[in-house]
Image 1 (cartoon, rainbow over the protein chains, first blue to last red):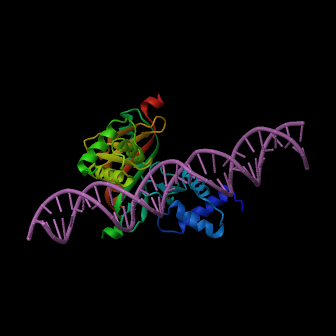
Image 2: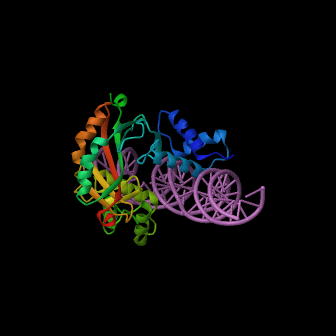
Image 3: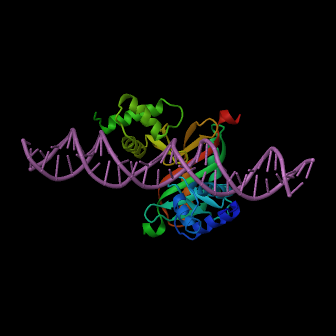
Length: 128
Length: 128
DNA sequence: TCGAGATTGTTATCTTATAACATAACAATT
DNA sequence: AATTGTTATGTTATAAGATAACAATCTCGA
């Protein structure tokens, strides 16, 4: 009935990895409930929030969904390209953007902590 | 009872402009209902979606709120800096980011249509 | 004026997310 | 090992955000 956070995080991450599309919190919840019927939304949200804090998963703010991190969790600026046709998501390391971003925020002495960069469009397959 | 889209858009925009913080759709709804009690959520969402399509307002995806555009609606890449302490939002023209962003998406032949750049941190006042 | 098409209003509901509290585990001290 | 304080996890209920589906109204050309 009770499961430690780390184990649950691994479960959720493998659910995310088993899917080639971003998943919403409630889709993940459904999957978890197959094995553990009592799971409730806060458990999923807490787990997802731990995973995103660790950089092991990313939340796609603009579509309210989650993907596993495919970049070794090291980018300072994850860039997520979302295909509006097929729903696939591609992750890039956007560290190169940092100087330009800093130039902008320095204008107003803003101290940046977290960068969100999402791009909507068509992936290579769908645009072809 | 009935009001054309353009007029309603102006109403919503001046509500947004009268507020120095981002507003959620339901906060805007509340304000509208002062003068027009019958207004329902879909009206607000339709109006906001027209405004954001026109570039006259921006949606802050990461905090589910809206701000009026302060940049003459011309930037190809709006950059929104959100202060996590006071909630204020600063808008910048991120057109300079475009070359780097394009370099990333070109790797996978992704065709970008819309860029979302949001930065969380502390504004000049709060960081001081 | 009539009717097709577009716009706007309304109802109801769905999805997403979290507050608030309850319980269980762990750790430190005795 | 019992007591107590602290943190982690589970549970209930509901808040907040968003939209589908349909109804009413307007516009404008024939």
